Image (cartoon, rainbow, N blue to C red; front, top):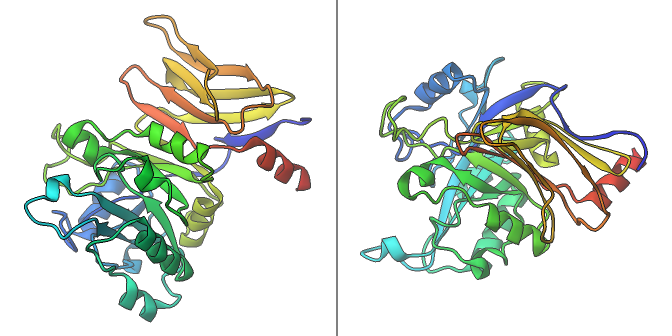
Length: 329
């Protein structure tokens, strides 16, 4: 490894995004326009509108300061819902439209799955069809979905999964799911991770149970346009957070360098055990760490935890493939 290679840097344009949102189009309490205004007030530039079973691109909401990503949340369930709903396994998948102007008629016809009595094989067939229509697929809230490893490890065609879902955290303190992400990575899934709100806004902003502004994704893009944001999502140019900032992740020589906002802990997760880490003394914080790379990591992904027990997570970087790609460029 020769020159310094940036896996992540705060030197480029960054945009704050909520990639899981519900409005009055389905079971949310605020209109799409109200969501736009509310999130812009809090410094967001991107919201993915992912109402349940209803795909609406909301192209009219995109302007020079805000990108509305067209999307839909689809659920496919083990059995027909009834009294057993609270114990029913469900697959909830967010689909983000990479180009709302392309195949609009086909999308309108197909963005409603057959919801009942299905397993991972059906889910995979549906994801494949949605991928062909130009959608990126994100696997949502595994814990809430009553899933174990045999339910999610067979999934195919995903670009990402939720590592944090704020609504689920408020509902049952089961919104943060880093173990699932590592299980996916270790089983061969080269996917990214996002932090989302999954907001329905039953409580007003400022209320302790308000499900907005708890999990977000920071996207690095050349400009604030629909196409640029989608390209960055495809390429994994983002990280997820509940509060802390990841400012730099880079490799120079055989050393991994990490710079963050003030945090208590910085950990580097790898394919195996014994994660490299730095921990601040009680009452102190740290903003950077350096770790030697041994060459057997498989992948690295950074986690930072602040004094409020909020986490930031990078995507996983598979070092052999990533460094080979950098050398080609």
